[in-house]
Length: 247
Ligand code: FPP
Image 1: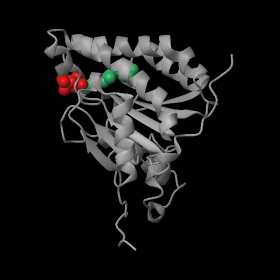
Image 2: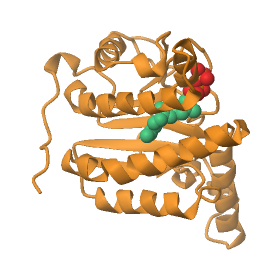
Image 3: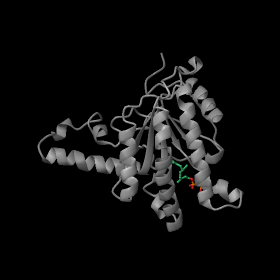
């Protein structure tokens, strides 16, 4: 099957973010406003995921990371959790071919241990199917928590030290991220949260140390490619100094 080829992004966006990470919030409120169950909002949210994946390459976004389910989301009702897990299974099963045809490389981050075997199997298959794709790197955070990720990384790092493969004095800012779920990804340049909440809720804690943040009022099911483009253009006007003094 022929695949969508890599494309040159809009040249006006050459100062845009290479890695955009999104906290997709507001599905529940969007559904409530319409007198519908929360899962209706999550299903509407899937359409926005599709839209931002399609828009990303035109905006110069090489890496797109979306927060689909946090380590804290298990506290929701059993019905909502089961509905979300079923939505993830269906999303992967139904969209695998389209994502591959669009030349999207898909990865998952988060702890898979608590996820059901069927879902984990689909995740593994999708990662394998799309491993050679190059147009855009989509990372889906599923049962992901930043603190949990750092704790799991530290455990593996401690095992390396205990086995004598790593010296304690060699553990530094370069070493630890090699054990994070995101070890093959660059740090996010721009983190967007929808729905008017101004917090990061345990998302990419280590990786976002120097990210720019945008908190927008739009509820996730109303978020659009146009709004993403506006935020990317705004990002291009920011002066990122990474702690240094401006020249
Ligand atoms: C937060 O909104 C949203 C979630 C916990 C689920 C996000 C999932 C999707 C957008 C579905 C599709 C994702 C993929 C990758 C297929 P909320 O429920 O907390 O909204 P509220 O704050 O208004 O209650």
